[in-house]
Image (tube, rainbow, N blue to C red; front, side):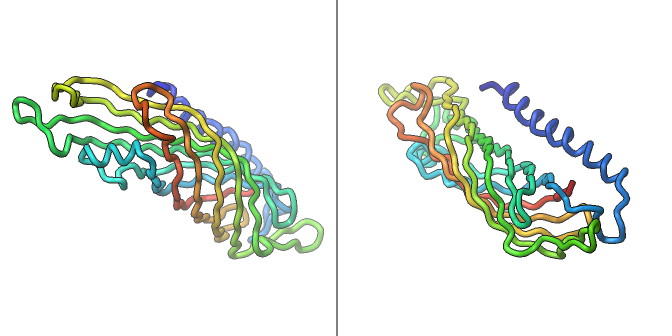
Length: 255
């Protein structure tokens, strides 16, 4: 998958979020909400969140990279941007569709070797994950209460837990100069593996009501996934570890 396709994934996620947010904003302008309450129980929410994705990086492809190049395991972690679209199915239960984009990029050199001119043998390592899932979010307390037949008042704080299943696209790519250990010559090459695999996740979070429509959301989520390498560039390596723990904060808009 090329940079162009990767950018198209990010643009598509943004376009979906904007397409959903536009009618929500219009609805907010059209529906008269009272002081701290909504006219009617909300049907769902859209959350835009950002934070940090901590990569487990536990497989041998990462161990080989950190042993030979000036990269530490923490360098595979990265910033995260994501979106969650939730639909209310019960008073405390939502079905939620989630997507995120995580990309780490690190410049490195061979730890123990230089070229014939005593210059570093350098390369760049890129690790991208795009998890997408559908799950169930369960609130531990009532997230609001109805007053009369129309008014709905959000709770000041609501905690939730959840789990989901889905898929993740990944790319692990290294571009630069390398050593042929059979004759110790230096050559230039791009090495890459990419593809799709199934994934599962579990999460816990909290929502603080800022108004009848808006909430501040914080969440911790663990994603678990492994994928077989997709090219001969990394033949002999076991499945690549795509798991990790992310912590995020963002804004949720009820609709």
